[in-house]
Image 1 (tube, rainbow, N blue to C red):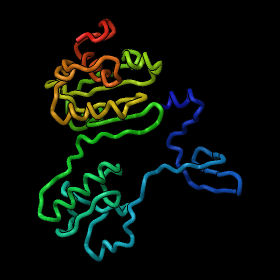
Image 2: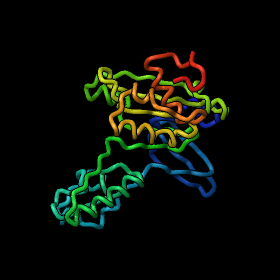
Image 3: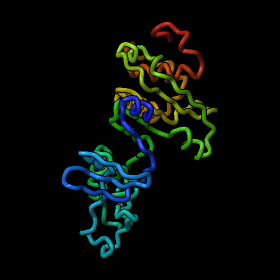
Image 4: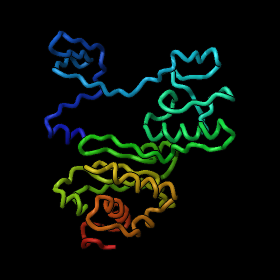
Length: 246
């Protein structure tokens, strides 16, 4: 992604460490460990801070992390039996669909129900151009869990729809458990990466093996066909296949 942004004339500075921001009436000045940056506009995209200061969590005995985020379990329960929390005030990932699902489960559970929230197969998308999408484990995370992994990465120049779109920036990557072939994760960099990733999420959720994904019928000339093609690379060279080859 950095390479693609560089090609668009966008300068990316990693681990700069912002120390101070000033405005002189006409321009912003951002002081970093790498020096000063100046510009007419400043966009802050650092996520949200839990707004819990006025809740008197300490008086209620509710545990929070160092950011003030309320700590909950998979049933949205806090450490205080009758108190539940959901959404961006908690330590869960700050996505609107996570907050909505958590809120529903909190309501069910606090009224006598029993519903949990499994975030192990949570898709996430960064809406850059191209988009960056991920679900499940990446290769490093899988190895850190002690799993023997096998992975393949398919460049989009091998996906017919990407060629038709004249936009082959990016790739599809699949991570599997080596012995069983079980799909552990998927990472996508593509113009419509967010549209592709949910299919991968369903495959992981249902415990599919890589050969089962490779054997599925995918409509030709769709971006999501890249998942099938990537799955096929575990057993064959897709560059030698005719279009739609099963």
